[in-house]
Image (cartoon, rainbow, N blue to C red; front, side, top):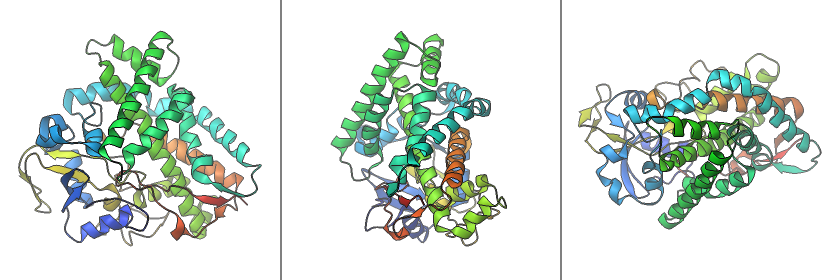
Amino acid sequence: MLHGSRPGGLSNAQEGQRLRSMGPAPAAQLPGTRARVVVDHGLAQRLTAGSNVSRDARAHWPDLATAEGLIAAWTGTHNALNSEGADHTRFRAPIAAALSRRRVEAMTPVIEAIVTEALTDLDAETGVIDLVQAYALRIPAQVIVRLLGVPEAVLTAFQGAAAVLFDTAASPAEVDHARRTLLDLLGQMVDSKRRRPGDDLVSDLVRAADASSDALSDQELCDQLMLIVIAGTETTVHAIGTLLVHLMTHPLQRALITDGTVELEDALEESLRLQPPVSSVPLRFAVRDFTDSVTGEAFTRGEAILIHTAATGLDPQVHDDPEVFDVRRPTSRRHLAFGNGPHFCPGAPLARREVVTAVAQWLATFPDSRLAVDPDQLHLVPSFISNGYQTIPVHLR
């Protein structure tokens, strides 16, 4: 069973390494289904960029009708993540436009203000703080509130339910209840934005959906918004927390950043490679019977496929000493933390900007910050999807 990181068990990275010993794409049992788990970086790149696999479960997965729980929640929604071709373009285009590099540049002053406010509030703290709740989570949460237009009360309720969709141990009933809660919250928000639109991403999406000749249904719009809010929070909070953990536990590497020898952006790419904020996103499906020309791995039409991003970043065929954090690594950008091919994450520029801004200002404000526990005492969230720390106890000074 592929459980994912959990207390007392293997981390996602360790589980990926165990699977690698069985081949480039061994079969494994997930909660509710069996899948081929791709741990070879080259194979993952070819599959995600090619036409032999699809994310559209409705068209290519015979078992969708009987899927339940976590797998059903991730594969059964109709949004940019789980669509291909014209549907994928219809879902993705307005998001890509809203999160373009130009738009991210325009958002930067707001991001900087959010980070400054968070650090100012922390400056009075004298004891141990939890970096996740007190800082890393606050940054993407406030970006979503201020730039996407999600009301703060809605986001708070949303985050509690969304956590269930990443929990490997959650029962099908718990997952179904969480998904219904999320869709209800988003439905209420869509209605509110229709009545009182604002200058924000959600209002833009509602306007675009209503004006298009190929308009999104309310269900599709809510499915799309669920993806945006979840991805915009979960990935960024873990990317911030994990990079700061790496820098606090590797003082020589940290010094290379603070003295300007190495750019912080390079350290971020190395952290994304070594411990991506998302270990895997269910699922892809074989469109036809095919054999990979490089590895010789054979796949059967309709077979479920999971790209194990955490494992592909540790591929020894790509990276020397892959388990070492090295901000000067020449291959650090060869990772799949934001996906690949048509499904490369359109929010990557915004996420990178949030992380670099948050970490740079943290290092400048708290240059002596350090973990308050041994690194071995940091527990990863119990998930084969999400890949970050539950809490990060820190001394600021």
